[in-house]
Length: 130
Image (tube, rainbow, N blue to C red):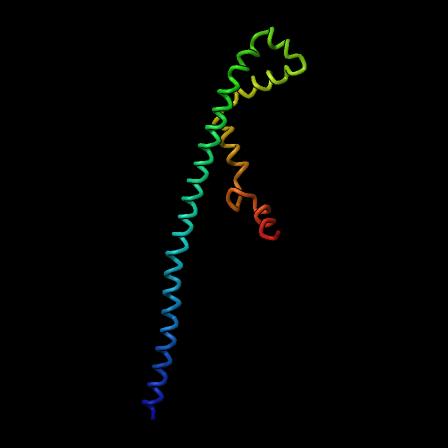
């Protein structure tokens, strides 16, 4: 009779140990999967924002190239004085031409970085609710 009680006791421990093994396996998977997913998210975040930086830098460089002719015209006194009330355009262009294209592109990326990707979270929420 004692051996029957011992067998029941050992079988109970076996079931408990088996449940503990499943938890250990789940924890091992989580220990591998979560850092892997975080690493993938970080990689995609860096790649997408690097792409945003490239696009922004290219657009700003093109804009500066397009404004170069106007800036050259603004240097001449005759053109500047003929602009009259629009002469502030020449002043703004002169100030803008001295700023860094790269820093302006970085500022654009930072201003357009959202927790929910390329779209502000409140817009995504509004789209799902509507």
